[in-house]
Structure formats: C-alpha cells, structure tokens
Length: 95
Image 1 (cartoon, rainbow, N blue to C red):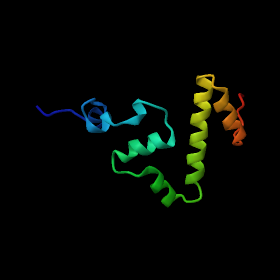
Image 2: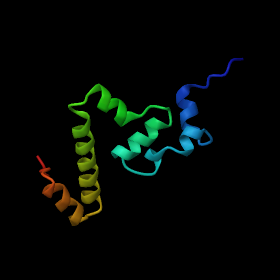
Image 3: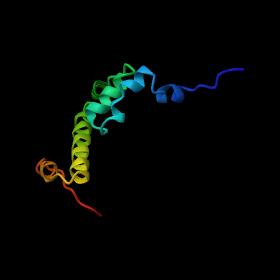
C-alpha cells in the first residue's frame, strides 16, 4: 500500500525542521516573520520582491509593518503603538 503523505502533511508535522523554526506559529505576519519562514525554503522573500518589483517592495514592507503594529496596538489596547502608526502617516479608521 502506498503512503498518502502530502507536502502539506510534512509541513504541519511538528517534527519537521521547517515547522520547528516556523515563526508564524509564534508571532504576527510581519516582514521579519514572513522573511524568516520563506527563508526556511531558501526563498529570500524581501530580496526577491525587491529584485522583481523595485518600485513597490519597500512600500509593501512598510505597509505590512504598519498594519502589524496597528493590529497589535488595537488588540492589546496599546495607545503608544496606535499613536506611532498614526504619526507615521497611516490613518486608522473604521468604516
């Protein structure tokens, strides 16, 4: 009988080296976390994005950082983080 183990199964197995070092299990999806996790597969995320989309990659990184900080500030009721996001020019509004 053949094994039916898939790539997804291997990635979700707690004993798999990729899973042991995966930062998404420990934190938010900020640029560093995503960069680390893509790096587990020898994929330098931000360097590749910069090479492919030089006019956009830095802005994507900055927006993701701001979004993560805003989320953290809101979830943890941290006024300093919310103020920092606003002072950096990112409006926080609910619609």
